Length: 302
Image 1 (cartoon, rainbow, N blue to C red):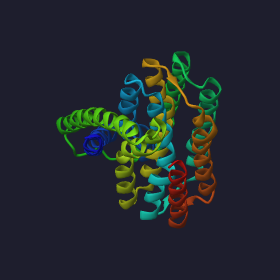
Image 2 (cartoon, rainbow, N blue to C red; image 1 turned 180 degrees about the vertical axis):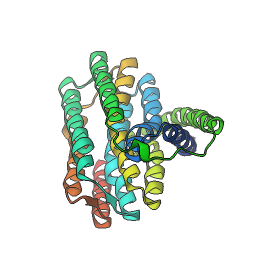
Image 3 (cartoon, rainbow, N blue to C red; image 1 turned 30 degrees about the vertical axis):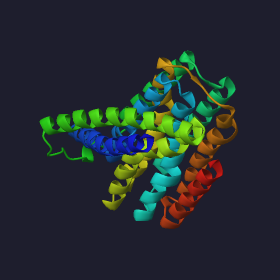
Image 4 (cartoon, helix red, strand yellow; image 1 turned 60 degrees about the vertical axis):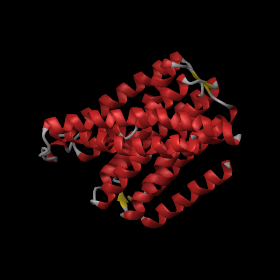
């Protein structure tokens, strides 16, 4: 039954997340935002809604390791698995401007968030407030610094259809998050696996399926900027927005393993992205190496 719940939750998250992103992008293009900003903000945040609702549900269910593991694991998977797969489909360009403006900012946020959580062994309501203020400042900065907004044509999609897709997608994500958390907690108990491991792997990859679908589709369409922006924006939203909202509702206590292993690996994944991005292109060979690194990480946990 727990496996059925997990599978049903993943399916609901996949379809719901896809519709949610379609609606969000439709609204964003009508506002004339650039592909990079759409990717970093609306698509990145839209595809992260499964992580938000899943972490909230897990925290309320008394499973803080599952909630935190979901966010940290998603950030690792976004870079080493999802962006890597997009690069394998079609090499992803990373301009010097994006490297400096978005890549370095994500690195700084990842380091500060990791140190904060490690020092405090979790995230209390004061920390949650700080994270949310930082997220609001980052979002405002992104929207103010959009030099390419005028180049994006208005979407032909009607407003009614856009709103409908957004609403249906949100409903699917809500349902999927509830089913996935129930099944994930049950699996952890059934097989004697720690909730953190389930959160870092099954739940993290499951809630990242919308990012995977959006990034690969963008890469196939030759929009590597949208795929890259999706991952960068999603990771910032995961750390500041999702952890902030979740800990504000239910303060999170972190197991020691996060400070020792998972948070440093999350920062390391960002460092790898920046090192590869110095060349200005994330190619197929780099994508294959990143996927291999993610596979080693998962094997290490189990």
